[in-house]
Length: 274
Image (cartoon, rainbow, N blue to C red):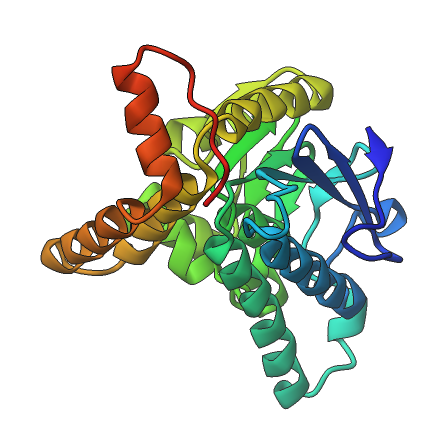
């Protein structure tokens, strides 16, 4: 993969684009990739650039994103505790809201985002992974929301998204105790989609999955993600209404005509992303 400046330049992130899959690496290994305010700002910048590229006019250069961490010890070990100790309560609230905004942006992207977790995904790291569509973990991965050990609570979405992933009872137990779990337990709870032996294996598996997605109609994939994300926390009736809206919008696309036509003509579709 070749480095790309298409989506900007960064001090704490590395971005590589290959075969329409963007790999975004949080690159602060000396700090176990902790989410400093600079990292949070750069994540916002990077994901905003990806969002802006997801149009027919831009050619849909990105069809999927892999998020991972550098250094081999951590995906993202958590928030930056050194920075937090000097924050006022109001500054901490701003820090919380800025990273929450990043996680909401990830959920709104019309392309799937896969977290490849190797090593620690604790606190903010776990919360970053939870905002992604899938989590592929290595056998060395560890997950947890240990904020109570510091006299804190989750601030980047853990109290909302962890129950959605693992259920209310399991989430309460993990958050109240601050307990860490390994990859096998994360898979059993439904937090991790897959567990692979090494980081390279997990990255390859993520790219394979995103490669499958990249061959599909990008607008349809985005609408499917919108319908699923939009249904979270809503009643069944409200979720179905959102699904019907997405279904209707799909019918307005050229890709729908191409996909159905190709099916009837027994040929492979060629999606234009519009």
